[in-house]
Amino acid sequence: MYIPFDQLPPHARLWIYQADRPLTKAEQSEIKPLLERFATEWSSHGTGLQASADLLHNQFLVLANNENATAASGCSIDSSVAFVRELEQRLGVSFFDRTRLAFLQDGEVKLVGMGELKEKVAAGEITENTLYFDTLVNKYGELQDAWPRPARNSWLSRYF
Image (tube, rainbow, N blue to C red; front, top):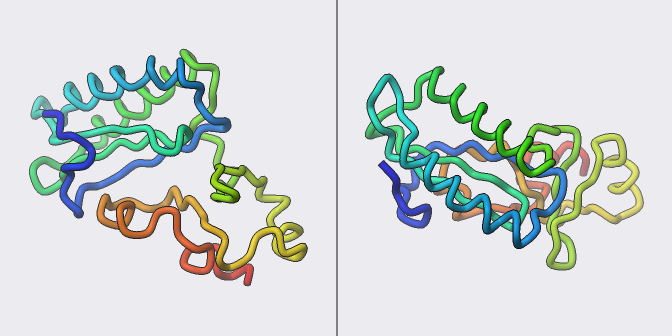
């Protein structure tokens, strides 16, 4: 059962997939109905999930499920990964590259390779106050309250 993204309960579980580039307006128009259809049809052992999906900041695909209603099973999570892989093929984009971190700088999403992080911190290009899109956030309430969050409030705090 589809739930509008902005009506998810704070405890809803999230899966965040970061694209390796911003999606174009045409790609966004193409993907949004696919997201809604997937969320509508997503199920666990034959029981429909109270699910939603959205595209945030033109670069983050977010799938969500109200786990209090029906928990996502391993098979349903596998089906969501397969769906995201299909989107990758369709759009020519990667949603599974975990070697690049996303920051909000000058109103835009900027990607930084893991290997560049220490250098960017040392140069002052990334500070403890730089807003970071932490893809490890897994609850809707946390996404609403603190996403992106200052880098110091994430696992990146060890760099400052």
